[in-house]
Image (cartoon, rainbow, N blue to C red; front, side, top):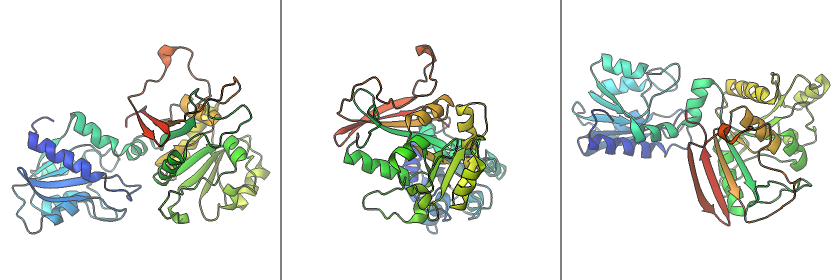
Length: 376
């Protein structure tokens, strides 16, 4: 961090820690803020809920009637400068008399993208932007927000459960259950944290799932549920499926190709299903088209749950941003057992996509392997 002291770095790290408290702010980013005079923290805040006060305002208000002319504001994300559900944070900073601001990461949205920092500098505020590991940590807090802002498509988390020999189903298609109860509970929490859950038509036909978030101890009201999305090129999803029957309460989107019969899509739309027509010369192109249209609907994050055919198409499209694989203590064997990722893949090891980060942890009787493939 150029021109920043060790004390600055300490307060920036605290702002990033505070940002993580914002668990109900989608589609907004999580943000944390600290107001400090040298080592003394005068006030802290974070963006707690969508439509509520932003982190900077909460931190400033926590200072009470303090004179802040000699204080510094530390914030994990560039302050907003536009009128939304709340007034601009740049205005609040200037009104508080703060003359120094340290920012951990930029806001890549078109209505921000450095404008807030420019306004503060124009008003004589000393503005510093973090670099290094702290900046990277701040960006990682808001990967879905950043990808959606930069390219218009949702950030994609691929989740799967596989055996020790890398299989997700037997040769007959049986897959329930490979992972243990603790892993399945965690997967429900992931569902609750995203805008949409995505599967292919093969999974929808084989399992007849609900694709709802049902984490233990948390309410699962219809309005709080993620959108359910099925990639179904020729509209084979039965009107009698659990997904269609629940479409009146929880949004269901079907992504079809131009090959889908009009009669089939009309019948599904009459049942309350939203139908998107993906275009493109191959499956990866249609994946990108479908994601573009979901992004235009405001979907900024999705949990991709397979199956292997759709997951392979997402990988070939370059649209898996992070993956989390549960490795269970089971062996299936058999050359016809299913792999987690199909698609075209690459021809040479030198062409393989290398993870930016890679880690693992124990979840009950399973091993959870996590890898981040892109950084936004």
